[in-house]
Length: 114
Length: 109
Image (cartoon, rainbow over all chains, first blue to last red; front, top):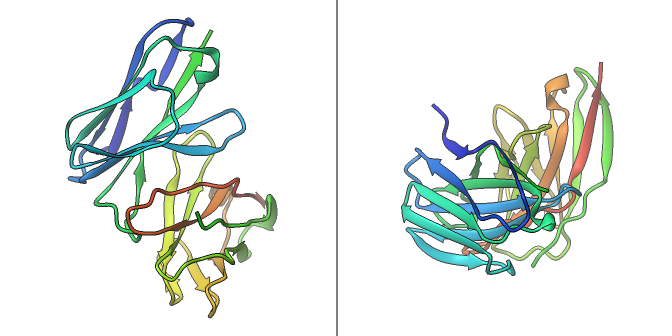
């Protein structure tokens, strides 16, 4: 069983389009995250949800909107895609937000904007 | 945010121990030291974490300096599958994890 799953695995799209990436975790965790890994391989936190509530919202363009329909899902919707949005997006989850919590990452969604 | 410093890259021979260092001189008393690794084309994977005492698990050992300003991840017998980027991260309560550049470990057969 996959603990944290993401769909799609690959996403190729044109500039200006709107797309969504879905994330699901079957670990019963309360907290979920979205990270972006750019071409230089730096991983940056984008959003964090705890019990369906947004707790971390880094400086991310408002074209990016996370949505958590329930604790097991955190989807990422991106409007008006730009070339610079090309990256690998990772979803993760943890039991909670304490310092000792382990995060479990999904396999990533490779987004290419043409 | 407390930050960490790691060497950009390290090499090891297969079946030999590997010691991956991390400096975190500005660590606060409540920061946990986490290690994750990222294998090629995969998401980050938890390795180990600790607060003050040394820690062991099936993957690795974590040695934490007495003043907590540095730590070392120890892979007791490196295998080719251990080739990855290893990240040393500090995390406090209610704070997110900030990934640095990590150390790229190459394992030679």
